[in-house]
Length: 379
Image (cartoon, rainbow, N blue to C red; front, side, top):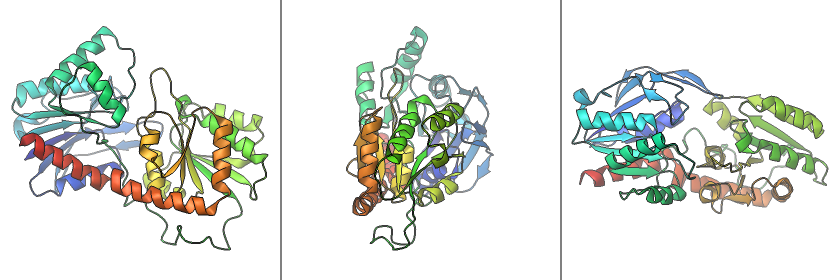
């Protein structure tokens, strides 16, 4: 089968899924991706390439990091030449790019099956124009992959009756994100570090709740933990200066490190040195956590995690971490204290996290599930 994958992948850990898809003997794959990607964390250029699969780097109009308003600077999407059986576009149904792809499919590959993807798990207010776009794309799609179970319910509310398998577009690259070679899950060593290190990975934006984490760390700083606490913030964003000011106000600025954006390989190395990773996301009127990729990366490294109950976080973490109410700094401080006081609990959650990441969210596993969907759709 010939598969045209249109997906805005931007680093090697994302591309790992494409490599696994291309290894299937019955698949000929062409991947269209943005020529340039720039956001708070990454700035990369991508090029055309030919190997086990074909990669076509395509310019975009608008910011590739904008999932709704950006679209591709092409009319045909390589359809007349490639003639795919399946067009798998990891684009939101209410986006301009999904509409663009649906129109291209209608004119250039009417017999191909169109598969879309959605992360959305919150019914945001939509203008009449956006609702019209969604009507067109839902009518054109044969199937829509969903990142979480809430997304399925939302599509049904919008009237989509096709298949909606829960398979996130992106999981975790368990080859890059893996535990330390030494036995993290065995008994602690006598030379264990003298400071507890808490980590956060992601954008510094209001909805990620980093201010809640700072307040929880301040509460821990005044508690009776045996070892002092340090916080490492990996990433960047518009709230950086405000968060630095808050750390000073809370008198923990000497224990908070703003490490800026890092590559996936660097993030993996940093994660392995942490005692716990926290994702304290908070729901807004237009957004709630749709997966929590940073949690998956930590889990794959065997690092215990704590997440808020925003959106899909409890679904992703399962029994492999602790869940606290979003926006509740005292509850987060209590969960951190519980975890940092118990090496046994940290080891057990780290073991569960690695197993869960491999079994449910590894790029290889998601590729295998996606291939099964391709074959079923064509049958």
